[in-house]
Length: 179
Ligand code: ATP
Ligand code: MG
Image 1: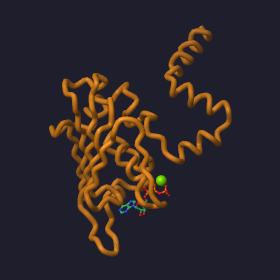
Image 2 (image 1 turned 30 degrees about the vertical axis):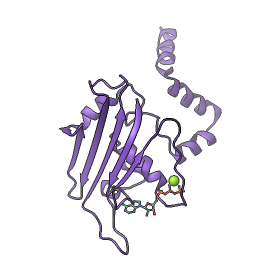
Image 3 (image 1 turned 90 degrees about the vertical axis):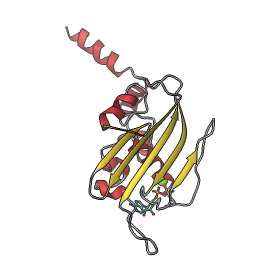
């Protein structure tokens, strides 16, 4: 699976629609402090189904909708679409899959897969076991990096074990040793 494109409108600082094409290899986004680099990863997390607004650096869901500036009125909607190239990891018979999430200032939200309306749990199901889901560790924030670097060796080990997917085996081993 590969990220192909991210489109965002009304999401946080993006009052105008932005469109980012991801090429093969590594994409680096550079810019001054406060220019919106982290808002891009927040948009990816959000469209993948993040429900905890604190993980998007907000306090209430409305915080992800453009709040306006001295020259622009606030917007009433935030919309993010992520396009992925599917090489078989995603269990839908399409080479290209788009996932869209919308939030209206009224609080109503909508989810779409390939432009067809769906439920949040369909998005969770689509990304389950791919590492890209809302609870996956494929998006690592600055704070998370600090947490990992400042953690004690035992905590850091747990993080690596979880990332490597061996936590469940350790738990099973502990269970059988107890018996
Ligand atoms: P740094 O280099 O410091 O990490 P950054 O490029 O990652 O900066 P972001 O944190 O992505 O910057 O962007 C922060 C900016 O987004 C702030 O200026 C903030 O005011 C703006 N912002 C966040 N939410 C909204 C919103 N709902 N409406 C308008 N602007 C917003
Ligand atoms: Mg940042």
